Amino acid sequence: MSASHLPDPSVIRGLTQRRLGRRDALRMSGLSALGMALAACGVQGQGAKPAASAAPDAVAKFWTGKTKNGHVDFANWPLYMDPKKPELKKFTAETGITVNYQEVIQEMGPWFAKVQPQLAAGQPIGYDLMVITNGIQFSQFRDSGFLAPMDHAKLPNFTKNAAEAYKKTAYDPDNQFSIPWASGITGIAYNPDKIKRPITKLADLWDEAFKGKIGMLSDTQELANFGLLANGVKPADSTADDWEKAAEKLKEQKTKKIVRNYYDQSYIDALGRGEVWIAQAWSGDIFQKNVSEGSNLKFVIPEEGATMWTDNMCIPITAKNPLDAIMLMDFLYQVPISASLAEYINYVCPVPAAQEQIRKDAAAASGEDKDYLESLADSPLLFPTETDYAKLHYYVTFATPSEQQEFQKTFEPIVLG
Image 1 (cartoon, rainbow, N blue to C red):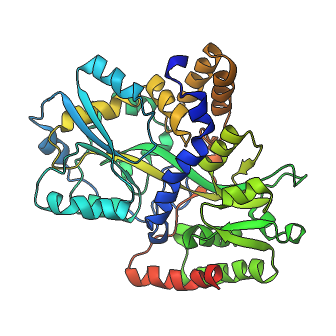
Image 2 (cartoon, helix red, strand yellow):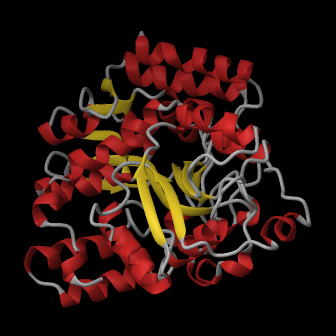
Image 3 (spheres, rainbow, N blue to C red):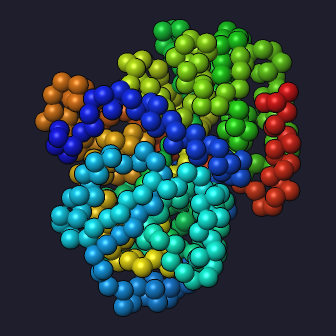
């Protein structure tokens, strides 16, 4: 991407406040509490909950006779594309297909509720392409037959350029209904100005040397994950007995006053102020905090493991322009285009080769833009290593609402009490 396509430096400096809204919306949607799957190479617990499969003839049945209409209506979350939309402009220039891009998805539950009646009635929802988070609503869309099956013959760039990680997801095996847009990781962040030794383990969150300087997330799912992983249990494989033991582990951290507080999005400010020195954290937040404020917070995937979530591009089964939509999906997997998106989004990029492209963009840039791009290219928060991926886990999943309620009853008292 040329330097002219980079965000204005003043925008770059404001990215923390901008992007935090995206992650906070995801948290508030309740997806975490209902269980989220992930897309990552070697993610532990993969396959624990097999996803529904498309019928053998579904691809041919859906795609036969579909033609290019010259337009795409695209529904996405806020703050997920440069407002100038350079990627979409290039797509239109190359294909003649116009794109109406709307930031209309704020939370997954309300989005599903909004479009479900039309989809159930076999009617268009006004969008040919939408980005939805893997989790309970993804399963509802898929299992209700609301998602068009992917024709991978029409996705050569995805086939060529996507990390193998994203072709092995438990929530959508073989990418039958989706391909990833971006991902994020929940790990540990710490301030090296306050802590002189490297933080590498979940066990560090229980270290009494940091009494009163540790922050945990108030989201019960995120909190529970770390309790489970600290006990050596994979969240996706956990039982009610495991939950009780994880809760006891977390209560120990609380009763000894090792934890200062259980935070929502405000953990990032607590870290910045020095109120806490270590905290559970979301990868994109830490990268953006460092870029926007010049801080030096460190983000680590603990030795015992961490968790991850993914947003995915899907085509509603009633889309008016599905061929145009799948052409756009594949276009976005061209390496320069994927790099361009990553330079704005700042979350985990599903195209490994975008890392080298961003390095090339940095070499062609200068000043603040150059520094920014170099920090992107070198960041494991955008391009995790295979070792990192191997330590990422699925969230707890629930077979029934009663299981979810039992889980909540187990962990909520820790946060609320």
